Length: 297
Image 1 (spheres, one colour):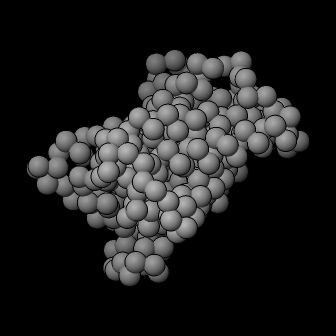
Image 2: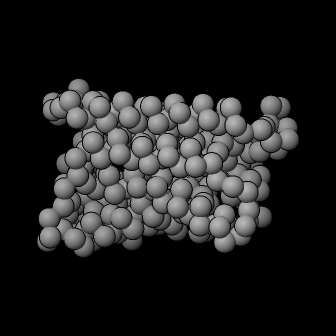
Image 3: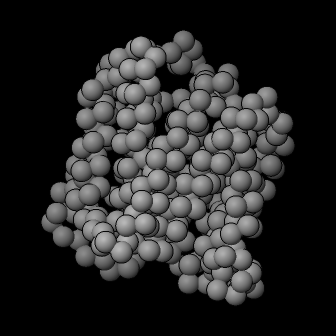
């Protein structure tokens, strides 16, 4: 998860540059196209069939994930970037709430309150870094940004479920990428200034390729993390992505680094470390965990 968030932040930098040349739908389309093509080749090389015994699970994971991504991009267009990112990173808080609610309804095992606390502390750190604000005329975009975080939480929980039933992460990411291709193709006429796909320059093609490669690698790592790790630990570590993004912004775009943001980053890192320590100390290993991951078996 630590490496996945770093690659996602690097992808965000490439998206920021590519946005000056392409519409949002085009970027989503090419991100998905690179991912689907590379994953199809990887599955073939590893002897992994693309046909899945759980197509419905992949459909709902792809639908929720791609919808969340599209809503987030839409929210970015009408909100200050810090506000949109904060709303999207509320996915970790939604995951904690979903898990607690599910435990109460089903009467299952107890949720570790300390892990929930690390998620909430991490989100406080995100708010300190981003200092979100919203105006009255931005309420609609804010509500859709909030919905994107909720759908992201559902998508991550579905990734966990897919890993538990033994779906390889390559197959999971392939179907998510395929969903991005479809969504990008459908939305490009609505989001492109030209009403369709732009022509390519060497710089533009390189940026789109970088977005696709970084996104695919990050998705594979994130999928394995959610398939083999504890959900709330991953939710806390996911906040590191905002730290990476903030550092990239300071180095590449001369963004200011106020003391409050530094304190927020320390909270984020501390929450991630605390979640990891709690995981190592309190959770007994699952059968076979030391020999094979649930994805590999």
